[in-house]
Length: 109
Image (cartoon, rainbow, N blue to C red):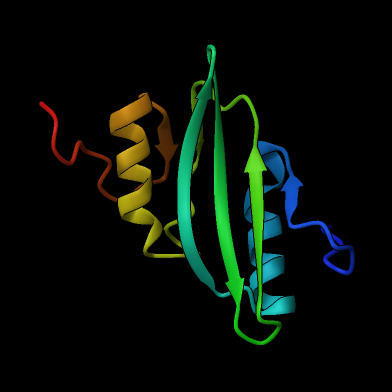
């Protein structure tokens, strides 16, 4: 589990830990606002960043996953506003989100 007592704001997690860590952070520390979710491409590798905010702690943290080159689990069941972010990442990078309720392109044909 993530230790937020450190001054670190960025936490590298694996794809397998994603859902468990998000639920833990939301329930335990009230990081219940997904402020942003975005992808970054570095050469052939895609990294996904999740920016979470806790009103209770008045703190922002980033969870990120490196090398998400094919598919990853959708987090729309935890944060419904991830729907749009995941669709943007799907459109821009071709990354598939497993379990997404309506994974289709937003603007490009």
